[in-house]
Length: 271
Image (cartoon, rainbow, N blue to C red; front, top):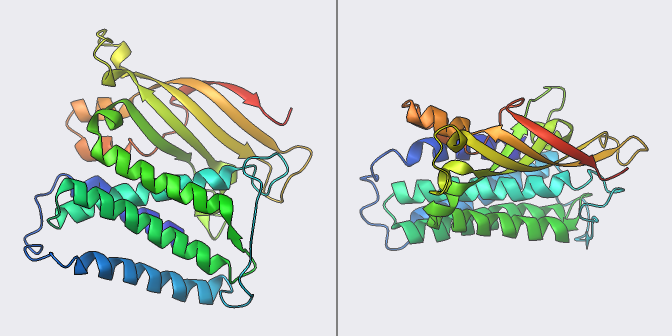
């Protein structure tokens, strides 16, 4: 649930901050104290939540490998993409927030990515003192997600061509909906509108998808467990919303993939 609070609050920030002028409260930020306090506050919340809900401090520090995307892992690798996406989203959102606070774009991108890296890997260190344990794979995916946030924030041409999205319809049966991988899909979308060579007005609203998701891993690997990779062709709803003046909704759709808006060609890697 804590990760859900992080994601929702930072996604809200990401959607709205870019369209707002820089904050007049950031006229004296040479000491970076606002960023320091943001990270310390995040660490304090993680610590308190971890002690109360994740048995932080109950074990001696320990670490191990979780097997990446192997078929017999706990979530078939969906949790690794969850770590990547969470860090990517938080890094972008905090970069937008820091720029709004008055930092130059390059500084904001660096500190936003660093804050994401710090907070989510601080959570991973906390896990090492619990029954979960420190995961080497989670650390790597956290790092890659934060680095991707920096890259996308600094390269508008890249984000014009590529989106990293999640598709998700919550069941509300799981207390921690952020780990409800049974109802999630992770997608990289290549958008035709980002390429000048695509001149046809209808084709410019199309996009190609590379997606991955797992099913029937709720209780770990079972004979019916599925690891699905797919290629798809979809509709660029973000472009349609943006061209009709719905800029906030368009930005949200750069991060979220509405279901049933693409045609997939799927392959079950467990078969």
